[in-house]
Structure formats: C-alpha cells, structure tokens
Length: 110
Ligand SMILES: [Zn+2]
Image (cartoon, rainbow, N blue to C red; front, side, top):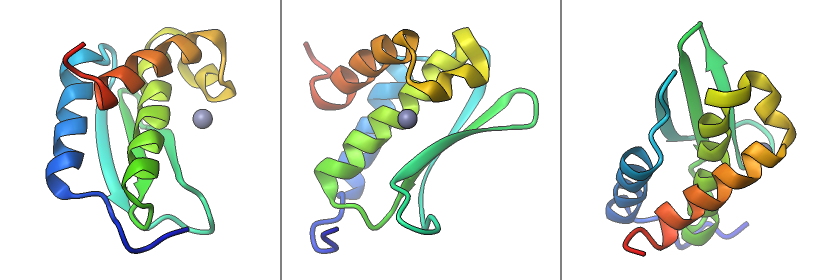
C-alpha cells in the first residue's frame, strides 16, 4: 500500500458531494469518514442504531484506491435502502448501486 499520494481533500469532498447528490440514500442518514481502520481493511459500511449508516475508508490509501473504496462502500449504503444488511453480500442490487456510485465518483458529468 502506497502512503505517498493520499487523496486530496478537494477531490475527496467532490466525490462525497457527487455521491450524496447523484446517489441519495433515502432511508438512512449516512456518515462518511476517512479514518484509521484496524488491520489491513480498506473500508466498510456498518449500521449504527436504527436509521444511521457509517461508511469508513482507510485514510492511508492512495487516491485512486481510496475513491474506489469510497464508491464500493457507499454502494453498500445505497443498496442497504433496498435490502438492509443483506447488502454486505455483494448482491445484484449492490452491483447496480456500485455502477451508479462509480460513475458519480469518477464521471459525475456524464
Ligand atoms: Zn463490499
């Protein structure tokens, strides 16, 4: 894992904004964080309480990887709307959500 080219704050905010605008999660309030995550985990999406989800991305990831992980984990939040915790299994709902999230992060103007 490279530690040199961490994601710029501007690019990160742009990606988060694009996700929230283009791929809104309706039933849950989603918190998105770049933070230290134990072990070699790149990120995760967890439910916290009844109506909240937390998306975490390892802050040590370099930019393209961090943004991909963000799209991946946010897609869990998006498909959580439909299938709740079953979303962790990378179902077809998750796959469709991932495609939308990927486009929002990497190609928002298309
Ligand atoms: Zn996943």
